[in-house]
Length: 267
View 1 (tube, helix red, strand yellow):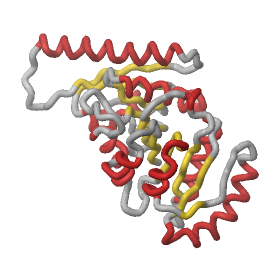
View 2 (tube, one colour):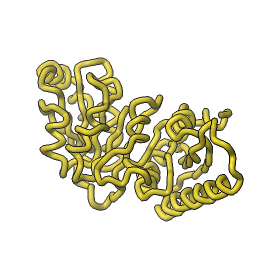
View 3 (cartoon, helix red, strand yellow):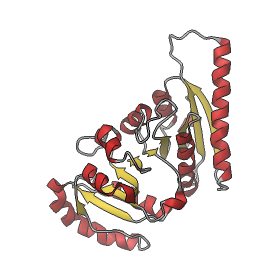
């Protein structure tokens, strides 16, 4: 990897799937609002021990070019002022995307790729990136902006020093996407969070007067998602939350959000 990968950008992992196109479209607003390029990265899987077959490599490259063009066409059709960059790389998708996104402002991936066709299930690549990337990771289930305008962005707010920055990221997303914000806190820390949050809420209401921002609700995240899944467009969680992010991006979260198109942002 060279200096090219140290320039700020929004990276999108593409593989030719509809989910990757949704991730590319979702990422456009992120890139435009930050005035950075949108970098579409396709990874041709290749093991170091794998023998090189020229015909096979040519087929894989042709497949990659079609997949990238599919995403580029979708982004261009959005008619937004965004610079598009393209990279076709070789290696392990997780490893290569982690390296490509090392200096990125965000990494966006579809919830499921071509190998994970089960509706509502987050694929293994997206789950692995969410737990290991150095930048925020958006796992995008769909991009239908006209059908989600009144659906909320839900964010966990805990009693650690990392809690407020996670909420601030959610507020930025809400402003960018014109969505209301709902704050939730685990019951075991809810009293402390509400005491601390009242001060934060006053400041946030001043800083984001255009947002619909509710007081903190006491709820376990997965229980809240199960009960309100149809009214949520995005869940924002901290990577260093108690217990990690595995429950939200893994099987329990898949079950809670199975019949929705709710995306997840890990910061």
